[in-house]
Length: 123
Image (cartoon, rainbow, N blue to C red; front, side):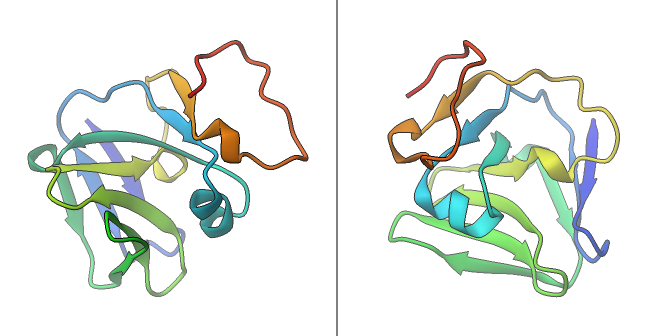
């Protein structure tokens, strides 16, 4: 079980099921919202409990929405419409996660100011 929260503690979440190895997203939307890149893992919605009154959802495209704290602005969740899974921010986990990074995604969109040289799969 993993627990996480936003910076101000207004949104908390618990992941109760197995957590797949997270990915790092390099797409332009994740870079703009996070300020660099975003690492997340995704779980079935039934395994994710979210609490707090300050959670807000921003429909960032026709396909997906991004969840964030309306008080402190922490970017916490990504959800594809109709998929039944939600990605949660690895950086929001309280304490050790026990998982290891699995891959990099949307690397064609990555910023030109860094390299990816950790040997993990890239798509």
